[in-house]
Structures are given as structure tokens and as C-alpha cells.
Amino acid sequence: MRRRTVLSAAGAAGAAALAVPVLGAAPAVAAPAAVKRNRLEIRGVDISSLPKNEDHGAVYRAADGHRADPVRLIARAGVTHARLKVWVNPVDGYNNKAHILPLARRLKRAGVGIWIDFHYSDSWADPAHQTKPAAWAGLDVTGLTRAVYDHTADVLGALKRQGTPAQLVQIGNELNGGLIWPEGNWEHFDTMTAFLKAGLSAARDTTPRVRTILHLANGGDNGLYRWWFDNMVSYGVDFDVIGLSYYPFWHGPIADAAANMADITVRYGKPCVIAETAYPFTLKSEDAVNDILNDPAQLTEGFPATPEGQAAWLRAVADLAAGVPDGQGLGYCYWEGLWTYRAGSGWDPADASSGNAWENLALFDFRDRELPGLRTLGRYRS
Picture 1 (cartoon, one colour):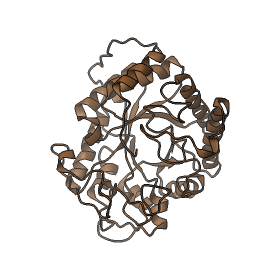
Picture 2: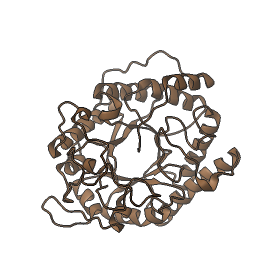
Picture 3: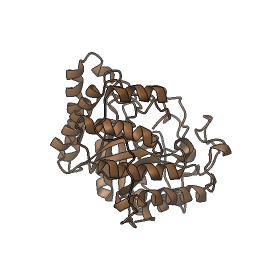
Picture 4: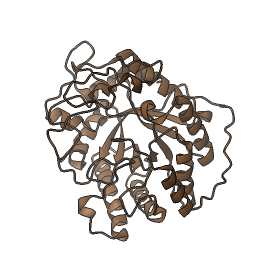
């Protein structure tokens, strides 16, 4: 996640014409749910910004105000997995192997599972940005494919060797338009899928029991998911789980996401997980940066920007995952729930003065106290 941009309809249509999917165009009709999940296997939170936040003085407190280790707080709340993004050579030195390894040890000690999210970039990767790592700039497609394998194997292998193997791994982040542009963009599905296969192979070679995820944004857009995953099937890409970003203020009504998840789990025979979601507990900002969510018009009806409204949204998205037919909704992950405001720990890894436009969507308030939503995330449907 960073900015929400989806391919234009014209662009997507043109890309679809480049690779004819092997699956039929007729809509898949999901049967009435024979099984519903009362318990969600995955009740996760992305904590990628935690090391940088702590290095810039962030503290975290229980609801009663007592200072506590944030990893222990999420474990005590019942969170099952923590997601950690991986950049190749970030200019600020965070979100790389050097910081992920000690954080993984903390998670292992607390009993929280590890979910690795490879971006294959030096900075944010999302539908609008899939910038090739600077160190890979001179490589041809064969070299880039090898770099994807080596980078993936290096990080996952190091995690396994220290006794903290990943349970879940994303090969790419919000891949609507591909990865490692321009070679792996949506105009070149042959190259895109070669990169994905390299990452998937590295994941399985280093961590045979890991579950692999391919992740798109725009979780309510069934046309996007059919176009993209039909192409994955036609190119023989073998993965385990479909990941979706679903933010109600960007991705449409819950009904659209529910319909999409019901369709794609039947169509591709894969379970799904909501890899990103979030909701504000206030529309105020703690720093001088105007937050992404700052206007009442951006809110979803029935979910006010309050601590209670945030917790209600978490129950709603848990119900969304649990309602996927035949128990094929594994759960969900809250994006950057520990990214509270601290000067120096902002959006731009190249600019220490950049602010945080997300702190009103964290799971800790402006006094650093855990919000009710954290306990909802961990305990509801546990």
C-alpha cells in the first residue's frame, strides 16, 4: 500500500488482449456457502514500520497507559501473524534483512507468526509504483529473474537458519500492473510471470512449508481479478493463496468485495486472504501532514471515525472473510497498525522530514495507548 491507483479500463483491456486466458468468460456462480468459518486462521497486522518508529523514540502503551513491548501487546491481544515488508536496498536502511531478522526473533518469542511481503523495489511498490531496484538497473530479463530468486532466497533462508521461518510469503505487493517495471509490467505477462515463478521457486526451495500469496489491490474489482489471475493460470504460475487489499474508502462496498471473493475462490480453487485493510479512529492529524483519511465524506456509512467505529469495521471485515463460501476465507491483515507519528519516521525513506499520513489509522491513539480495535483484531473470530 501507498497510493491507490488502478490501471485504466483501456489499459487493462489492451493488456488482456495480449494474453488470452484459458478460462472461460462466463461468470462462475458460487454455490450457497456450505461451510462458514467461525474462527479465522489469520488475524494479522502489518508492523513493518516498527523498527524505524522505535529508533525515533516511539513508545507503546496498554489501554491502561502502562508502557509495554508492542510485540507483546499484539501477541496478548491474540494477533496470529505479523506482516513485514521487504525492500532491496532502501536508502534509510529499514525494511531490509538486517532489520527483519531481529524483529522476527521478537515475534517468535511472543508466539506470533511471520508473514513476509516482498516488494522487489527499494521503496514502496503498489499499483502506481513498481520501481526496479537501483542495483538491478543494468540487468537483462535473465539477470532480473535470477536477482528475484537470489533476493527471495537470501531473506527467507536467513529467517529459516535463525529458527524463525516464514509461514506466509507474498511474492510481490499489489501487483495489479505487474512488478519490476518496465520489464515485468502488464504489457509483458511472459516476463512478469517469469519473475513471479522465480520468487515462488525460491520461497519453496528455502522454506518448503511456506504458503505463497499473490496479492492485488482493489479487492472489490472482480474484472481486475479475473483478468489478472486468468493470465496467471494461462502462464502456469503455481501459488497457494489469493491476497486482496480491501479498503472501503478506496475499493467500493462490502458487497462488491464479498462477491469478488466468492467468485475467485471458486474460479481458481484457491483460498483468499484480505492482505490489507484499515479504518480511522479519528479524522484529526497528530502532525502537520494532512492524513489520507481526513474528510467525513470518505467514511463508510455506519462506521464513524472513532475508536468504536474502527473496532466495528474490524468486525465487519472479519465477517467478510469468514463469509467466503466453503470456508475459503483465511482471514485478514490490518495495514501498519503500529505506525504512530514520530518525527523522522515518515513516508519517504529518502526524506527524514517527511511526515506520517497514516497515524489516525493506527491501532494506537495519539497518547500511544492501544485502541479497542487491537483486541477486536486478535479476539474476534479467534
